[in-house]
Image 1 (tube, rainbow, N blue to C red):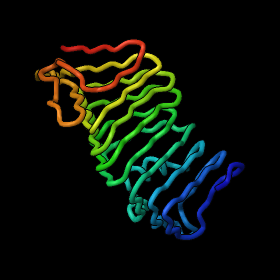
Image 2 (cartoon, rainbow, N blue to C red):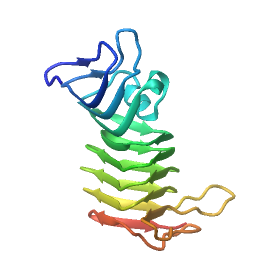
Image 3 (cartoon, rainbow, N blue to C red):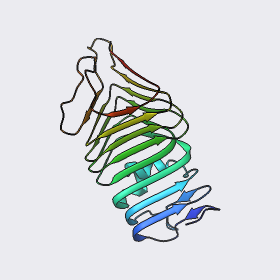
Length: 211
């Protein structure tokens, strides 16, 4: 762990718990350009990761296809904006970024927590599913859910400003709702309206719109 400079992994690491903290950059690539590490829990805290490494690490793309994280991936990259596409994980995910946009199909067999530190947290035409709890937080902005599905054992949404849950209508089609489902309850929301929420929601204002 380093709190004063960059962190660079020189060789392959096999560890039950790994924590890397740096003022600037964390680089998980070895001297040979590989990332075939094995972790039980991986926790990273830094201002940035080079290139698209944060996104690729989460999605398991590129050199990170060979990396194994079994229990939990905790990633805090405070100066970067995250645009998260599709991924499927068997570990818990905890994400802290400047702002977060989820635009694909995201699933984990365990818990999922996402925190936007200085902007909005958006789900746009997305699907978010967790076998455990789901936590969505925006420290200074809003949470916007547009034509997206969120499902988990329990759901906690907290925003400094507003939580907006919207349907979406495309040309020549009927409106499609956003669905939020916790536990084994029914999914509420159909044809452009949200009928109910089984979730803990904390914000200045909640807005649900239909088209």
